[in-house]
Amino acid sequence: MITSSQMRAARALLAIDQKQLAEMAGLSLPTIQRMEASDGQVRGIIDTLMKVVAALEGAGVELIGENGSSIGVGRGVRLREVGQRRATSAAVPQSEGKAADGAA
Image (cartoon, rainbow, N blue to C red):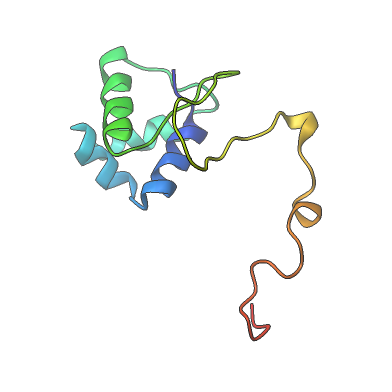
């Protein structure tokens, strides 16, 4: 349904913290913290998971399942399979991430 990584990534895209997600979903902060601390697929009460998914989707996040296609338009981000990932230093050119004056 949703992974802990997807939850964290969705919050980052929305620029919200765990407390804000908890409020949006009508859940407690410790519940969100437990969900995000889990490894991989978030397990829990289906109703609780559905509240989180509904809150994220209601805020404009499209959650894409394993091997799923996107129905949205525009830009997006998807994590590659472990064997297909490149080293971070090789994937990001040196010029990116620095200010125009050369300061980091």
